[in-house]
Image (cartoon, rainbow, N blue to C red; front, top):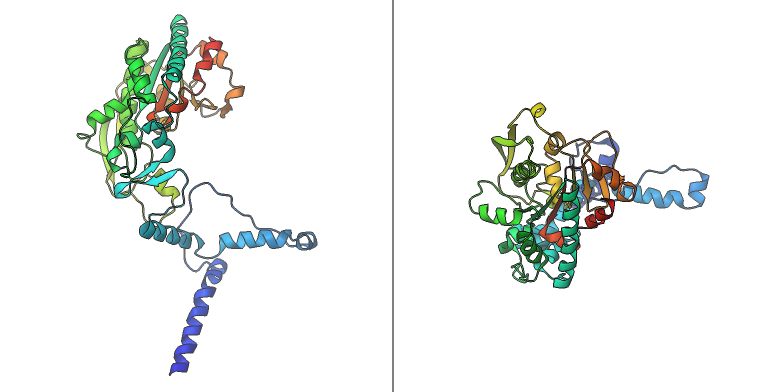
Length: 377
């Protein structure tokens, strides 16, 4: 009897060890566990005398097989899930764990906490350039609008670890710029203050556990405010949105799990119902003016762009200058342009408004070269 048990155990172990190879060859079971994130994918190689004797085939084939055996993606997710569930460990850069499984960004936290603050003299010099940019634009009959958005660290500091600094310092980029903008004639839209005001009354989450950016619902609220402000500043009828209905979902969509998705777990970190608005347009598009805007901003603006509404309400000649490094056109037939090849002088000629759109977590580099436009006006 013991001999039979040993033989059966041996057979079972061999089957377990061979099963990934059998699966990769015959695809017995469907595999629906794609991996997300940034990583290099090894490609299969060809066996011939050159690749064999130069050891190219062996190395490339080993890499390829390590990434393409049966159930590989499932096993990667299982390993990541165990690390996360038992050890609070995850394999994503620039992210740390807060309370109640809330994930935060080291980069945004450093900007929010004021740890990278360079001093009053630095913000004074930057603000002088912003005032000069505003004056140049006004002389050209154009508008400047500065928008500061919350970051997750500023919006819900109560979920930061106890070891973290949880209050925006009096000496911080946000407080310094906010005071200067509030006392100036430069149009200013403070989403951080607005989101704090509606934090307790908002019917749906504005930030999620598994993302570092605001929710799709939060982005729609921000877009609604932006369109109204643009229309008021340029004194022209720009189309607006109104919420038609709200679809609730247990599963996050779009970028509402941008970090959780990159963690490649078996189950999503988010535990809240999330809201996805369906909107109506207030006016007929044909009856509205479509302003040309140049938006210089960070990744928080992507939430607005991803609704596709700005592409319909703003001119196709508009651009989103991501961190002032590349110009993303609103005309989908055009390709992105490196900022070095972007003709700022030409594009500014018929621009209605320049919008600076940055979160509290990225103000250490604000406005990321945007004041260079002074030389193009």
